[in-house]
Structure formats: structure tokens, C-alpha cells
Image (tube, rainbow, N blue to C red):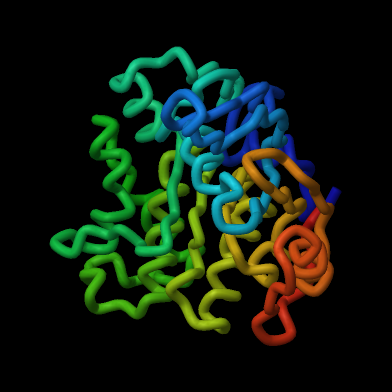
Length: 276
């Protein structure tokens, strides 16, 4: 068997999930804002199932429902109708306290703006989800994750002492520290230059391939989406299309069919090989 392990073996080894349930499952999810003729139908009956240990990119034109999809899937917003399950757990009936606990212990988040606390050290930022959840703060795991994202020995620094790319690496380590069912990434490379963005995306890819993590990423960038196992395209609140792992040029061409021409920054990384 060598160094390559199955997705299930990676999940068992690193603690990502303990069932065969999909990481994310939406059934008939609708989200409407307002009522009557002026109501906005942000999501119009989304049905999908995302397996554990997978990397999914979500794309679509402005107003397509990408942000609403992420918010409903992550329990940050409640759908008007339908069902959302995370790691086999139905979340649409949870109250706010239950959702807060779920987000702290079973979900990870990576945002464009990093959202690190400047008064805390790098290590303290990584351990923050454990602290908020009231559990033991595992400094050894924090150190391991910082080493994995290329920040070994920088645990005592403050975020202001790091570059933007390094701060996003800290945010990725923080998102992974609780071994979440899903990591939701919202435009995680939007504030980074092309080279640094590629490095950050490679880290997310590695989290999936080596740690068994599940990543759902909203992006407007075909080059970023080319790192994913599949790309979902939303249009007018509905799932309009999907592609298996493809090059940035192919993804841009499919987006153009929905929105018009989409620029591809640089040559694009293309599909990234993964371990079996």
C-alpha cells in the first residue's frame, strides 16, 4: 500500500468524521428575502451531496447565490425551506446556541480578510476555536499545523509581523485545528498576489489530500477553482452546471457561457495531481 492511503483511511487517521455520511448535504434548499412580488429568491431549491475528503469550488456571476449558498450550508443563515446536513447532522432545526457550538467545534472558516486577532500570538489565534469551545487547547496540534503550513517556529509572533500570505496560512491552520467536518473558504485568495494565492490554494489542496479535510470554497477566480475536485456553477439561485477537475481555461470557458468572458490571471495552475 506504501505511502498512499484511501480517503477513508486518511479520515480515520486524522479524525475527520467517523461515519460514511456526506460532509455536506442540501435537499430542496430555498432562501427568500422579503415577501410578495418583491421577494428576492436567492436560492431556488438546491440539491447536492458533497463527500468527505473532497475539495469543491462554487462559482457564479454576481447575484447568483454563491454567498447565500455558503451561509446556508455553514449554518450562518437559515434556509426558508429545505434541509441542510453537515457530517450527517441535521442543522436546519437547531437554535442559535446549538449552531454556535457546531460552528466552533465542527466547522472551519477561511475568509478573504484573514480575521486574525491582532492582540493574540499566532499560536493563540490557531488555538482560538478550541478555547471558545471550552476544550483543551492542544498546543502540540497547533505546532504541527503551523509546521504543515510553513510557519514552524513563528507561533509567538503577532499577525502584524507576518505577510498577507503568512496570515492566511495561520487562518488555514486555525480552520483545521478542531478537525472539522468541513472547512468553508470564502474568496480565500482575494487579497493575495498570484504567487501567494497559488501557495495558499496548494495548502488547501494538501489539507484535503493528506489530512482528509473537506473544503468548500466560493471563488470568482478560475485559476483558484482549478485546484478543486469539482466546480459547481450557480446562476439565478439554482445549480446551473458542474465540472469535474478541470483547467482554469476550461472553467473560464464554462463561466463565460453563464456570464460572458471571464479573465484567467496568468497561465493558471491547472489541475493539481493528488494522492490516491
